[in-house]
Amino acid sequence: MSRSIAASALSIALVSVVGGVCSSALAQNVQLQVTVENLAPTNGVTFAPLRVGFHSGVFDAFDNGSVAPLLGESDVSTAPIVTIAEGGSGSSWFPAFEAADPTATLGSVVSDPAGPLTPGAVATATFNIDTDLNQFFTFAAMVVPSNDLFIGNDDPQGFRLFDDAGNLLISEITQTGAQIWDAGSEVADPSAGAFVVGGDNALRTNENGVVSFEFSELGAFDGVETPAGYFFDAGTVTGSSEIYRISFAVVPAPAGAGVLAMGGLVAMRRRR
Ligand SMILES: [Ca+2]
Ligand SMILES: [Ca+2]
Image (tube, rainbow, N blue to C red; front, side):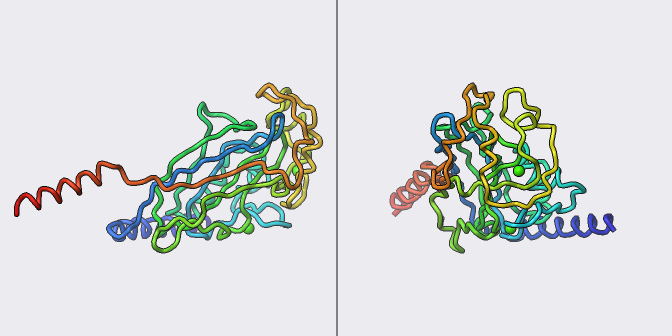
């Protein structure tokens, strides 16, 4: 059973590669700069690196009000969205995304130097996007200190970034406290939490809950010391407080390309 699924996945992947080669002459590629900002005040929440996908709109890692989908995993602790929510790595989120949408462009926006995005910090990354294939944007990042809180989009077609002509449709996405998800996978406990001095993120107690908009578990972390050297203040997060912004900007084609075109024009005129 699993072998035939793997074989069909492989044949789909091969067809996709061939299709990619055939359509490459017509592909519209855009260099897109993605900037993320932690808008939380001093002693507020921090974020793990943002995991992103530019895609066709078919991969859905979770639904509001439902248990985190396993998507081929055997246990909720390794469900794709839980590998974002409980540690931030996306260790099974990336493979599940790629399996569902083999031509998606996947990656991360990581601080420089690499590490958590603390209050007030900014990070950026540039992606090469085929806007014929990948018009939709999906994101997910763990919110810490916590056991299983994250930000991300439930609807895989909720953020259409590009139209059919390759024009950028969205300049920024802002998230508030009310948009923090609790994965419902791990009971709130600082001793088993992430981004807690003395906490062991490898420990966990099943919550047996559903994914829902809920940031109340942050209260369990009020006053804990973080590895960034500050003591978390849970009172900094309210439903309406802005905590995170993702901005998009198309990187203009290199100036050299324009200069070359001008040079060609001058050369043509001189020939006359
Ligand atoms: Ca969903
Ligand atoms: Ca929880």
